Image 1 (cartoon, rainbow, N blue to C red):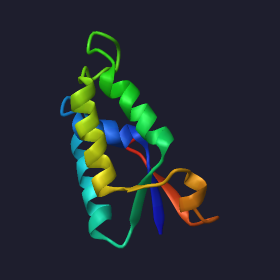
Image 2 (cartoon, rainbow, N blue to C red; image 1 turned 90 degrees about the vertical axis):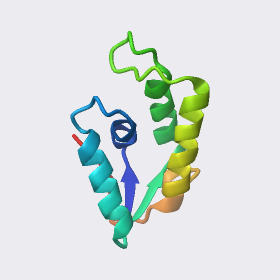
Image 3 (cartoon, rainbow, N blue to C red; image 1 turned 90 degrees about the horizontal axis):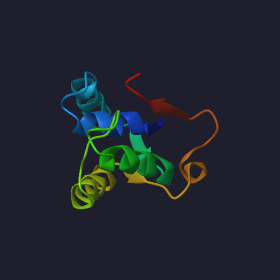
Amino acid sequence: MRTLVDSNVLIARIAPERVEHQTAIDSVSRLLASTEELFVTPQNIAEFWRVATTPRRRPGGLGLTDVEAGLRRKNIKAILRYCATSRRCMTPGNVSSTSTR
């Protein structure tokens, strides 16, 4: 089965101060160890980038520099399949969404 990893999961994985942090790490690790195929799309990456580079003084912002966020983005693309469009990675009825919410 294929699973689209929600941007909230991507964000929680790099933000130890968030209550979902460990859950996000554990769930992605568990799915990667299974036969699950995890993927992200440009939309997920854009949402991740927006939150990651928003200053900490603003609600929800992680305050990463462009360089730090770029390294995190590179890591995401290294462990998860990157698809230019979700349509290319999905088949009807065969995709779920991973989220910590």
